[in-house]
Length: 212
Image (cartoon, rainbow, N blue to C red; front, side, top):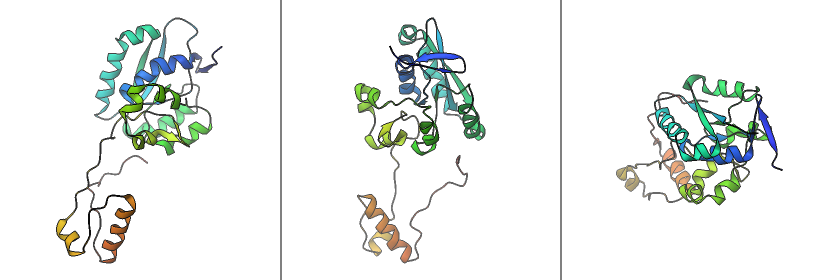
């Protein structure tokens, strides 16, 4: 028999979360919590997402899923809760420490879910990702690693996962006999050489700080 866990009086099976929830993870890229399997009838998975302008993408994805054959087959739907950005970290921590924790949630990376993983509040998605070609082949391994801890995956990439392009000043590089780096070690070495020449290595337009 498949083990069940409960969340705020609602009981779900692991199959429910990994069946219906994995589709949600695929479309909205949230991190899966450990509440799973319905004992019968229709059930609802609650998902927390960061409530900025980009949330409209998740709203459309959830609406599409709720109207899909997959939702009907799973006998359940996704309830999306948009949490204002400035309140998100605090509200998530509070919710995760209560009987009303979300079933899936948006997160910034592996390190910030460490406490939840250690408290056994997260579903390990490693095997699910490996067995699903769309998930396994849809992301670079380094990108999937952002939602992993100790080699195990607990989340699916969602937003901000596009490549970051670095531009370099050819004149400065030529003057200091430098070549564009191809590895992290080379980048750090160039950074050190430019700093020793009293040149600021990087400039980034980030006047507004992100969430801590």
